Length: 322
Image 1 (cartoon, rainbow, N blue to C red):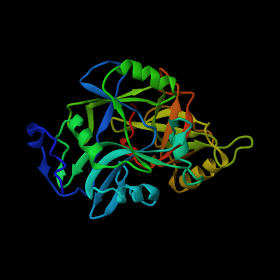
Image 2: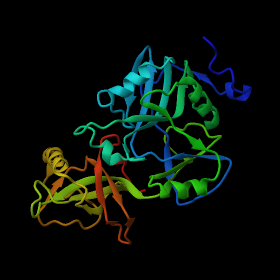
Image 3: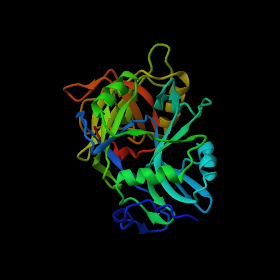
Image 4: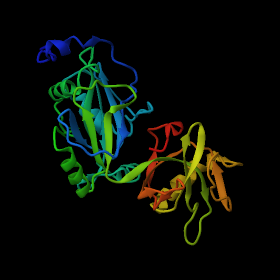
């Protein structure tokens, strides 16, 4: 078999480390920023609105793992099959599982996967392990080059394209197209297990995960529940962020009621803030929801929030205000 690292410079080859395939991976996470910039030391990728997924292949077996180590194999069997057919037999890649609504990725559509026939794709953007070597110490540009050569990117598996300049123009174009934003990545940076300022999130729309701490009683024709009470963790305390009462269809409301029923508790889980108490049912803060909104108010509440779907790929205790 040819050497997959033959094209690497000597300095980069010295960074390779022989290691067995990992059982799990802590993914690299980006830091939110309001800066918009052009810099040849950075590359820019489309920010995908989906579920983060690490794929580990060894001995012909493929494992798909969410960022909190939840197996995604049964949920996305077409992605497992596509990766099984790759010629490379030992690799670890990082990417995002997405569904499309028109020309943009949509977490809301992806969340309907269990109730509807929704086509999904795996957009791969990084390489962590290849042919018995840990490659995380390599510069991003070198990892991208190895990744593109290692996989064939057929069927449901796609390579995540990037640009090396014009970050400001690319950001304006992303927002005009209705995308979620961009991810800026330092081209010479290694892959870090955890959050790093070498990756930056440039968001077009305000959107983030929040934890459900309770719900209000239904009104009018709505059944099961009215609005969800949302919060996030701050210095060990659970802070109230407001309530969301839009973005639900009948099936979603039924599913939420089913999931929240066993989590009911007597007292409010919120340590900070003033959530409504009349007609409220409190729940253990365990379910994570993806919420779109226009902005944060001065008193720390969401303005015009909209429910997009539940997330099971992030532990509730890790949800903080971005």
